[in-house]
Image 1: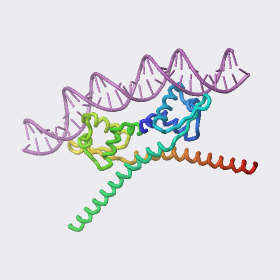
Image 2 (image 1 turned 90 degrees about the horizontal axis):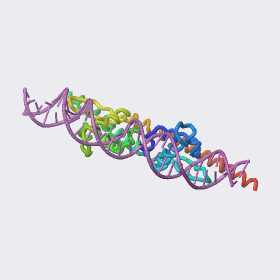
Image 3 (image 1 turned 60 degrees about the vertical axis):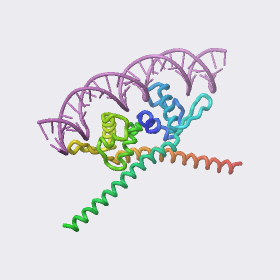
Image 4 (image 1 turned 120 degrees about the vertical axis):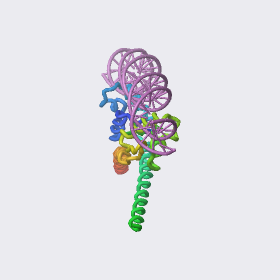
Length: 105
Length: 105
DNA sequence: GCGATACTTAAGCTCATGCTTCACCAACCG
DNA sequence: CGGTTGGTGAAGCATGAGCTTAAGTATCGC
């Protein structure tokens, strides 16, 4: 998942797909690479559940699947919350210490 | 950034650091790898701005920096919002078409 | 001061990643 | 039907990521 988002080109593809579905060649157009390379990136994104594709006739259409994105977002926000809660507790603890010191001194 | 979070071991380190600061060897303890390898991972995380470290005496203490996490979270949620808004517009469009059809028929 | 501890640095090794080329198939278009 | 378009698949290559070993440096405790 994060692995899939690690590559800048793949992030650009995700970016592109945010603006709506696209065929493989449409998706490939802005890049300097071969169609082959793009398809390989696409496979990674699809493997990570970030995009879904369906083939109609000879053209494969790709669109974003936000569920995977949501999962990643959740992962991050959970860790962040965890840390920040801890940080708050520390703040409270220090404040308490200060209070005691102020009391004792 | 995503690059840094791409490696499962590094994600575990982030996970660990959520629960509070740790020295390098504490951070390394749960892993099978060498201290050296852990330090290298740490360097990546630090390079990505995910952790900050300071050395006191001979021990380096690491703690999470949530700002970078926040940035990643924002990136994701922006794309997701973009896509979902588009999706909603499409829904509205289709609903409108249906209404017209129902009207016409 | 001396040994243990807590890293640091450099070199090297292996395997995965990102890419290319080339041959190929399938479907659309005239 | 034949050529073009859109995509597929396999093979090969270059680079980089993740790891290890090994040797070195700075601090701490006695």
